[in-house]
Length: 321
Image (cartoon, rainbow, N blue to C red; front, side, top):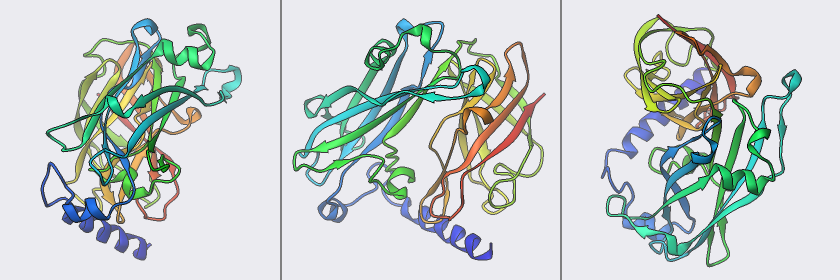
């Protein structure tokens, strides 16, 4: 354990040093010339849910920046695929459909972005397109189901990059943020101010390091709305070892379930950022849609372990008032 924690602290120092340079373009000309790979940086996921009550107007929307060593000239296209994870079968079983292609984005759709200095594209895939690609209809889905989108960046030189050949650093570090995947939850619409305001945080279990991921003691926190069913709360990750390291933890209130967003960078790790995310459907947190006084949240701690050598484990905490 001492060895793990030692590496953990060194990893955090390395991350902190890495991001002390230019905030907008955290790479230099040497990096550009020497990097023979490519990645797609997730700038923002603006629409991460399909509303069961408004399928016709629901869509998955994401903004991506592309990086290669020729300022985007190597981009051929980006291919999106999807499968449907049915979490609402009788008996609590889960089924997953065969993964299918749903959209191909050509290089011509990218345009240079002044802020990042990289080619950028805004992608929108409607729920209707998704259902049609999978050969299902709105009657085949329910709250807590999810759609797993993945994408592959194809280059004109024949190379391809996706989550199968990207490293922990590319997936987890704050700038790269190149997960090559995103889950879209099926939700039941709620009021924008529901499940917001002042709550008390209470840990309900420990993670791989033997401590509660967001602190071992009760604390007062504020829950805010991202719009729709998405909520966020500022929490310190592993404050027992690295105090003063807050990040906005995001989760969805999905009918009677609480589902964290996947691949959330914590800013802490052992050379790369630890990512936390959503557990399996059987371990989802719970909420009573008619009572906003308690929210049980279960995360998948160490979804990506940041090179810390720890296995993913579900850990719960309670927000109450």
